[in-house]
Structure formats: C-alpha cells, structure tokens
Length: 202
Image (cartoon, rainbow, N blue to C red):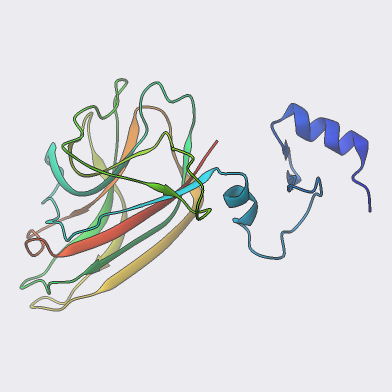
C-alpha cells in the first residue's frame, strides 16, 4: 500500500521522523519494523557500537584520569548520541566487592584528551560510515562527573560477572557530554574488564 503523501511530506520536514507516530523506513512505510526496533537506524547508517579489544582496569570513583570504557560526544559534532545497550564482563574475577555503574558528565568543550582511543564501527556490517561519537579505553573526563545508573555488583568477598542494560535511547549525550563505566569502591582487577556501548546518532 502506498504511503500517505501528507505523512511523507511531514516526515521529510522532520528528517524522516513523524512526530508522535514514528520513523519512516527505507521503503517509505510508517509503522513497526518486523525485523527489530533498531533495524531502520542500522540500515540508515545511524547506529554504532564501540568495544574495547583488550581487558581494561576500571577507574575507581570519578577521577578525571579515567580508564575503562568511555563514550563521548565532541563539542562540535552537531548531533546527539542516543544510548542503547551497555554491556560488560570481567574476564579476571574481582578479589573484593565492587559496584559497577555508569558515569555521566558534561563540559562545553567536551572530552579532548583521548589517551587510548577505541575504533567504533557501524552495526551495519561492511559499512564504512565514521560516527561522530568517540570511544576511549583511557581519557581525561571533564566537568563534574556523577553516577547515572548502577549496572552490577559482586558479592562482598569475591565473584565475577556479566551485565547488560538497554537504555533504549532514554539517555541522550549532547555535544560536550559523555558516559563511562566505573567502579564505586575497590578498583576492579587489573586488565580485567571488557565492555561495549551501542548508540544512535541523530
């Protein structure tokens, strides 16, 4: 069935998104994508993922000299990053209690010291689109960081674990903003953390 021309005109005016209704797919249709809610963003080359390729030592608390996995939005990007799934695992078991959470922060100039950058990739396999979002295994976080959400905790004495949380785009990283995975109490095991961020740019 042909797309209503008035809906198409409204969608074009709003960059493919019909306010209050949803996103037009590549065929010009409006409605539910049967293959998954993120398939349209992936096909339109707006969805990306960044994962560290080697185990990292998570930063303790909110220290500016950060290690772990950080997703930042450059100050001049002109886009928002809509955070999707955050995943992580400890490949080395922590020897003591740790609480793992998501750090948030913002500064007008954004994160500029990318000490150990990670190369993010589109989720559309084979696509070469370069995202505006930056992913780092080590960087200098800026502004006044704070805890955003808690992701995982082990037992009081020992244990390892895996976590995943889908923010479904409800956490928006504007230009100058960032999110990062960190620990609340004792530092996690040396080179023991691997993780990933998934996001949509628009």
